[in-house]
Length: 462
Ligand code: GLN
Image 1: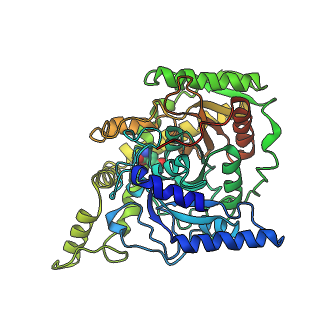
Image 2: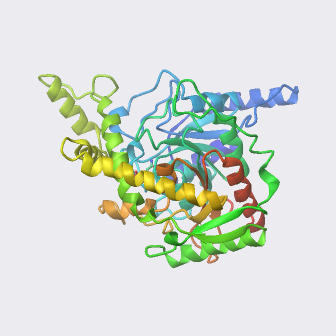
Image 3: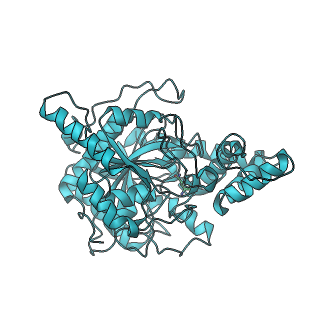
């Protein structure tokens, strides 16, 4: 705990990974209590004493939970999210809240209403988004584990950019109770960690059915850790030809092909597959996600929560002024696009069509999983880009999600593990996707890769 707190003090002015840090004295007391319990042989949870940061769109009782938005800048929820409650019960200690893109909308963290987090491997570059603070904090040694959220890639893409492990669990594997909703049919809470074991331990601690989220699955949560070292021989990996085409930067391609070779040498079978509707992922995702966002964000009206514009004549003016002042540019863009896609006369052409495309993409994966155990490829088409490079070009920003939205649209699970770019440069993410509730196999394959390739790159100097 003290090493993490010292590290936060030393590097936080550079990384800006955190929006809130808990009181040092209280955290050290909590850590001492766990030490004492450990010495007296009391039973301890699987992550007892591990310092964790929580993305700021996940409710923490009495602790600010802003979603990096001005409209929630003074909001502290009266309850813990289910994932937070379970994390605490497993012994995790919450050190702080992680920076993010406002309402989890973005791929660079530059949409945070407060400050943009930076990539700890190169402070001139973005950490990715929207869980950029989670990935930057874990990469920089400001936390050991983090919980992020992934609607279209927001755990995996920043994890890839920052050289750490990130998981988007199966839709329904982790309760969304207490997660500030962005797009409810896509959102999942997922772990960020330095190694595969950390992610497996954290997912095991927070996953499982929850009566407060009716979309959670009843499937029992396997002991991911006991199966972790099972190796990858006997598994068949599918390499989608559509993932290795235009737009993929050559250095990322060679790193990812190298990772696939490592798994083949470790005993996995590798074959080429096709996901014929893959190219429509981004278009379908941005219609479905924005439509759901426009509906979810209607609740921020200045009456029910936190921030309210004062001095207006009537309710309508108060709503307008609150929302105009409270939401940032990207959030407004999404609300407008989503409202349009749902409006009378346009709904069939946009929202319903996107839902049909979503079903086709899910069917592509269902067909693939009849033949392979996992689909493997890059997490993102490029490495971390420079701060400012894409912020004025939303299409370029959205293209960062070209390989990650599929898992959300199909409801399947996926992990990003760091793979060696071979040139000593910025990290590259290698993505392993599995069918619903097959996280055990996903962790085994990821661990087999990590064991064969060697653990990442340590912690940056800063
Ligand atoms: N970058 C994507 C978006 O902006 C994904 C965000 C997310 O997964 N929360 O919508």
